[in-house]
Length: 131
Image 1 (cartoon, one colour):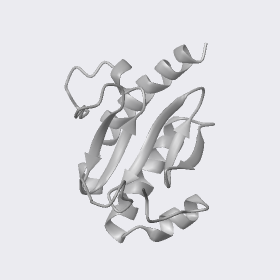
Image 2 (tube, rainbow, N blue to C red):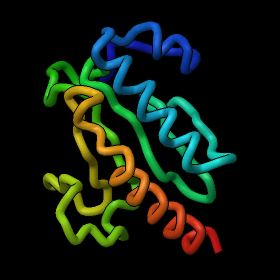
Image 3 (tube, rainbow, N blue to C red):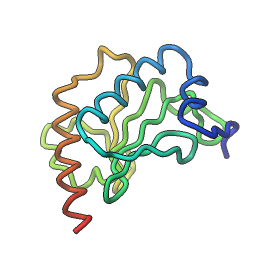
């Protein structure tokens, strides 16, 4: 289903176009600054993040799922998004029942404090699911 096969996060980063790389680097920094001890692992050729359960993923549009590009920018996904209190409808649900996401077209689109609030809530959910 995918035309790439990365062996490491560094290979993944080297593959990205400059505009997506900037966004990915910013999102990774926010995750690592917000959630000490989180694990990063490539799955489906993109980074996924885990503590007790799967929590987040970062999926740049340059990494296709299938043969066609279905969005632009970089998608930040919450694997347990349906358990987050998204009262301001910040996250896109699409046709998904569990995984919710936010797409970023540039680093200017990233409201760091707002995103961190969702990340911190996801940490609480992860702790509850891990009990």
